[in-house]
Length: 434
Image 1: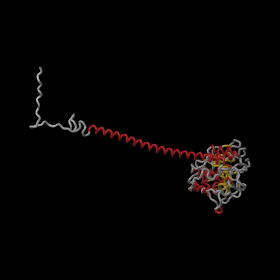
Image 2 (image 1 turned 45 degrees about the vertical axis):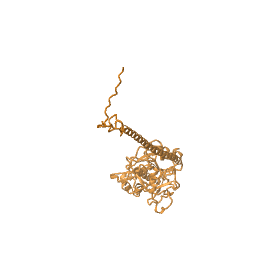
Image 3 (image 1 turned 90 degrees about the horizontal axis):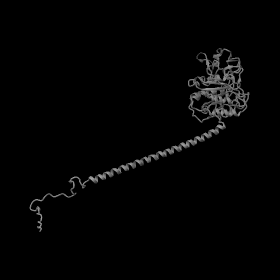
Image 4 (image 1 turned 120 degrees about the vertical axis):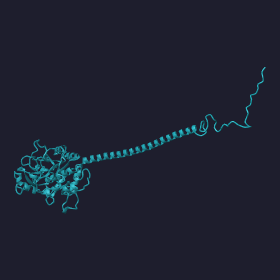
C-alpha cells in the first residue's frame, strides 16, 4: 500500500486567517469552539446528556498524537510506533493524528472546558498507533495490535491505492473480535480507496455544512455513511502542535463516525459492531434533494450520521454484521457456525422431546405402580377380612350364644317332669356264677 497513503486536504486558512492559530491556545479558544459547526450539526449538547463515550477506546492509526495538547491531556493512552519503534508523539509539522484524536475525544480546556476543541465523544480514550501502511503487510500488525489492546473502534483516516491480503485478514480478525474498523473513502474524487474498500470496513465519505456531498470525496458502492468533512476545526497545526487548524477531507468525517460509534457502544454494550453500524445507517439522513433514491448511495451511503437519533430511536438489532459487507472467509465461517448452531438446536429439540417422552413414561410407570400397590393392599385387606369372618362369624364353633363344645343348632332339653318323665332303670341283675 505504501507511503502513498493520503490524509486530508488542508484548507488555505489552516495557518492564517479567521482562526488566528497561535502558540497560545487561549487566544483563539472562543472562536475555535464557535467555529466547530459540526458539533452543532450533530446535536452534540443533546447527545452528551445521554453519553459522552466513557469506557470506550478508539485506536487512531495515524502519524502520532500530541498527548500534551491542552484539549487532549488525560485522554491519550500509551500506544505503539510501527514505523521506527519510537514515541507515538508526532514529529514537528505532523498534526494529522492529533487533529483526528481531538475530533473524537477532545475535551476542551479552561473553566467549564469552554475553550478549545471538543470531540464528539469527550470521555473516550485514544490509543495512538503510528503507521502509514508502508510495510509489506500494510497496517495488518497495527490493526491486530489495536484489537488485542482492547480498542472498540479503529479509526483509519488514511487511504491508498493498493490492496494487501494480510491487511484484509486483519480486518477479518477485527470483525471476529467485535471491533469496528472505520476508514475514509479518500479525497481524490475517484473510487473508494483502501482500507475503506476492504469488505467489513465502515467506509465514510464527507459532506459540507449544508449537507451536500463534498466534491473531492471519493465514492463507490462500499460507502456506508457520510459525515461532516468540510472546513473542520481541530486541535494541532503544522507549525504549532498545541494550536488549532482547519481542514477538509474524509479523514475528519471518519473521525466523527468513529466517535459516534463509540457513543453507541457506550450506551448499547451488548450490540455487535454490525448492529452498531446498523443503528447509524438506519437513522442516517439524506439531503432533501436526494431522498427517495436507492440506498446505499455511492456518494452518501445510507446518509449523513445523526448520532442523537441513533442513540434514541427504536431500531431493531438486525443481523450480526448489519450493513457491513462480510469478508468471504467470515461468510464461510459464519455459514459453518450457523450449521453447527442449527445442529445443536435440532439436538436440543430432540433431547427435549426425548426428555418429554421419558417424563411421560415415568409418569405412566408411576401411575401403574401406584395402581398395582393399591390392588395388592386391597387384596390383602379383603383376604384378612374373609379369614376373620370365617373364624368369628355366626354359626362358628364358640360363636356367640353357644357354650364352648356345644353342637351348633341344637340346644339341650331340660330334665322332664311329670308322669311322662323317664324313670331311672335299675341295672340288670347278673345271674350268680357257680
